[in-house]
Length: 272
Image 1 (cartoon, rainbow, N blue to C red):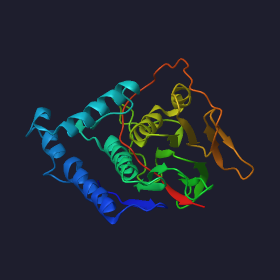
Image 2: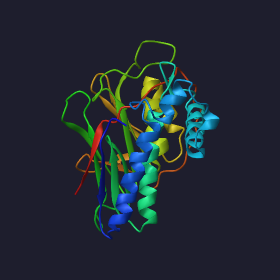
Image 3: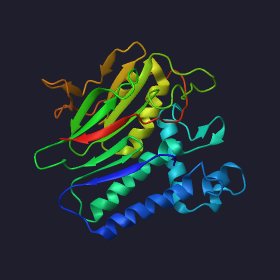
Image 4: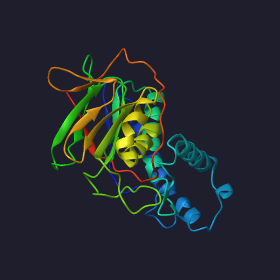
């Protein structure tokens, strides 16, 4: 998938066989969904050499999930880049979440999986110590602009820090207006990753849309270097972002603005 995956497993340990199974499965995911490999089923599907019905049930389910997420984001997220099938914006987050679930099934209660900067955390980093995920500053390469702390959280960022301006408003060659990065925090990385992409594509309209989502919070950096956060995030005495434990599911009205994209993870994980 053109990026690096890392697995950070804490106590209790799982068997080497379980870890090897997860790694082998991630390689299978790459062989199936990679747009960099001309022989992958996704590349062949994009070229019209096979039909979706010729793909495995798993591939069809992933594509169906992508279409559902497209509808939920008013098509600010899309399975297509420049008119060509490219499910990368969903597959990476989905694969990390699924690999994490496999480790849980094998007995892990504390781990962090990082795929190109998108992170799925399970449990705590150590007894009584929550995971800490650093958010890269899109205006200062190599620097962090914030740290989010939590247990069992999924974190994904889209923005300009790693790949420059590559996300486009649907039907336009222009990039989103007003944002340099959006970081979303939730429980399920498959959805959170796609939501982060959609939120960045929305530009200034993202803030109201994020407030309409259940159990998802956001931290954003603006073009001018300012920041804002959703109502379910607080900061502690050190300035660290903390998800409010008393936050409630919320639904507010939201009027869509524009559309489409492809993702860019821009953060790294750390434990303390």
